[in-house]
Length: 245
Figure (tube, rainbow, N blue to C red):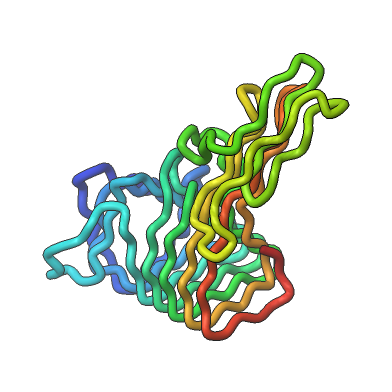
């Protein structure tokens, strides 16, 4: 990484900080950033966030909780990526978040409180089984598909999963709530694709022209079953856009 903040290390920067390093990972964040209110990730740059990442919005702030990040403004420039480490979710409190074309924000789960969020065309907020394929804590087994030598069944969640090859075995069981969707997806059996994660977004204004996804993943094995999608729960006073969720 161009900049690496180890656990229990402090980096004191300006109130508006832009990450512009040119390495594979421009910022690897496991320690504390101090004095930052506006966090900007430059074009095509990558930030890797560990579970111990901590933010202090002023230099004299005393208390902060590891893994709970708060900002006045977050801007992800075109092609930039903020990726949480495997098996890590994102708890973010932000005034305004703007994701430019091609930007990506990826974590096992999201708990976001915001005044406004704007996902521009081509941007992605993801907890999908495909994008989080190395996370072992992304999904659960509650609705997993079943094994069969001729082809496993798919995982269930909001409904039953798909049947196995030639209907040899039934799909995974449904679970969760239509009105309070707060559970991740399920694995498509022992050799199936991963289920998707979960997202909770509480924002006054949401403009989604990008993609918000918790899709389950296809299996790597030819006879495996697909994982089931997770949950997206958005509470907003005003929501618009031409994107996908």
